[in-house]
Length: 145
Image (cartoon, rainbow, N blue to C red; front, side, top):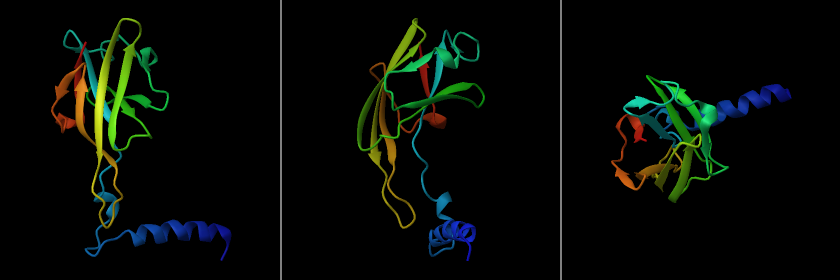
């Protein structure tokens, strides 16, 4: 067996070993990695959609936090932190020098199953010291500047 065949065989065996007794694919049964999504609005309008701000105007105070803009029906700001675990995380998000908001997000580990390892799942979120109901509608929190 060549080295290339071995590299193809090992992932295949790992995928097959993930199958549970009902022959369902474990990847569809496991919760996905957590992400915080924000629809940021000023005077009722999305600040990225109307051109008030661009991705380059956004800064997040935590250097480990990854952030990006994704467009579903309107552009939303996504935050993801590889350090998320059981606990509360605080973020200060700035849009240029004019607007900012704070986020306090609490995560708890999901239950481990036959297929899935525990992952951090959002259990509580506060934006500018205001509680937001979890789970979030469509997974997106609205921020009014």
